Every structure is written in C-alpha cells, then in structure tokens.
Length: 86
Image (cartoon, rainbow, N blue to C red; front, side, top):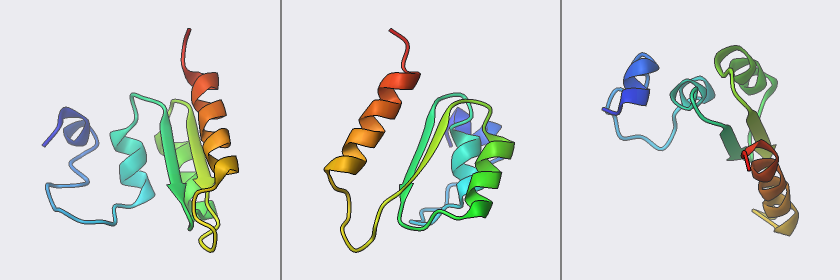
C-alpha cells in the first residue's frame, strides 16, 4: 500500500476495483493537484473534494455520448498549466 493511501486511512485497502469513491481519490491525492474526469460528477462529489482536498482540484464532466473530445483535452491542459509552477 502506498504512503498516500496509508495517509488517506487506507480507503482503498489493497482491494482491486474499478470504482473507488471520490472521497478516497481526493484523500489519496491530498498532497498534489487533483483531477477527476468522469461522466458522472455529482454535487456530493464536489462537496467531498471541497471538504477533503486542500490543494487545487478539478472535477471535469465528460459527455458520455461523445467521450473525451478536443474541448475536454484543452480544458484539462489549461487547468494543468494554471496550477503547475514555472
């Protein structure tokens, strides 16, 4: 188990799964900028990240009927450049 997962209270717990809730993702990423790209981002996801992630964060919703498109990549790239020093 990584140090970040241990610091996050072991919320992943070594279990291999495709679904880990937003709170765990935000806690694991608490020391770095955090991006979540998903087709299902809820108000509860935003509350979890606001409450549990002190650093920069972006919850980016992708239209499931289109998938990732150029505008999504541009938004992600712009955000990364905005929060990356130098």
